[in-house]
Length: 464
Image 1 (cartoon, one colour):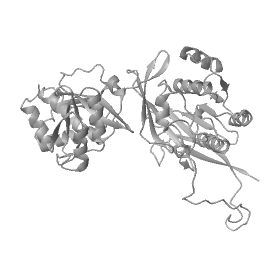
Image 2 (image 1 turned 180 degrees about the horizontal axis):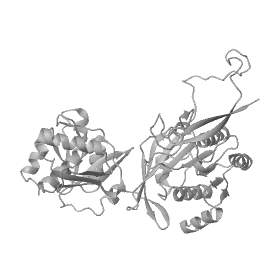
Image 3 (image 1 turned 90 degrees about the vertical axis):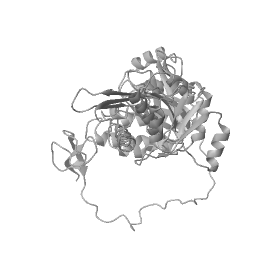
Image 4 (image 1 turned 120 degrees about the horizontal axis):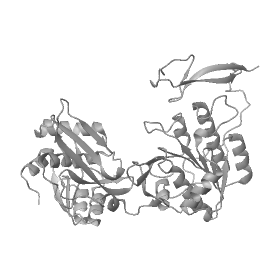
């Protein structure tokens, strides 16, 4: 007879403990252990291997020809771009983001667009009543779309309904509110989230239905629950943005059917999430070209070149310990750039407070932004603005050398398209790619081999 076993599971990392403790030994989280009961029938009587009870699995050749999966367009170009060209039937997608960032709004707009195209769509909410969803639909102007609504948290009832309705798209908002009666724990616990995500993912594969799961995030910005959920699904999306900005960034951090790190840019308006066709122009719309410390960086987000403004302020510190504040960039990377400026270029920045901000709420992660950050810091420190209509990109090494970066041609073409005429870039030498980049671009290129030469350019006041 099955016997009940008690274990304590960490709600942050999913590690099981034999007894309760105030701190998880694996991830270090405090007060995260929750008691969960499981049923165990004891150890198996014999090994499964060689028992003869399994079925033979069908094998196929690696070189077998197979047609690519057909995609369903959502009607929202930026959303389809992040997915790699549209929704793939039988795929499981996990969407995370801060509360109130616009996840449900975006998904309701996408569900309405897909339903209007003739695909059966079901929206299941475990957090809101159907009347609340209808109110949002009226505000978004999609109340006439043929989207079927349900307010339910029982996984068994939801799967029974989906089997009978046979939809093309299912949206579960959110996975933390779902519960399975086969697990003796509360909704939102590690065991429940893992079990419900597995069942819904298997349903998507078995029925050829696209399933989108909405996930809550922790205060660190990670999707709440066990990390294994991100491994189960085919695509993981994050909706990013600052509350003080109207911009929202939809970023793919994992995608089995398209490129990862692709982004879609939206603007939050009273009528919902509006697509931004030209993100570079929007991010640079209110920029003051003559302000010291303002630099335009030509970056690559996924397959898209994007121009964004870096703002730096270097001010004399009134405290014994100088302050470093960063928004939208890696603070460790900023510390490295400051160390190189001090050790290799002779700038004395230890007694100065340093503030760095990426305008528009976008988060930049590529090392190609090193040179743009250094130029912004030097510009603010010397009180000399960067030349007008200039973009900057390049990676800085610890020796002070400036290293070339990939896709420089695409960066320069994006800058040229928006009216920039000068580029501060690393020296590419005499390679074939470098010559092709210069031949195709009409912008003037100023090359820098070392960071010291950029500092000297500002020290000489060589700015128009």
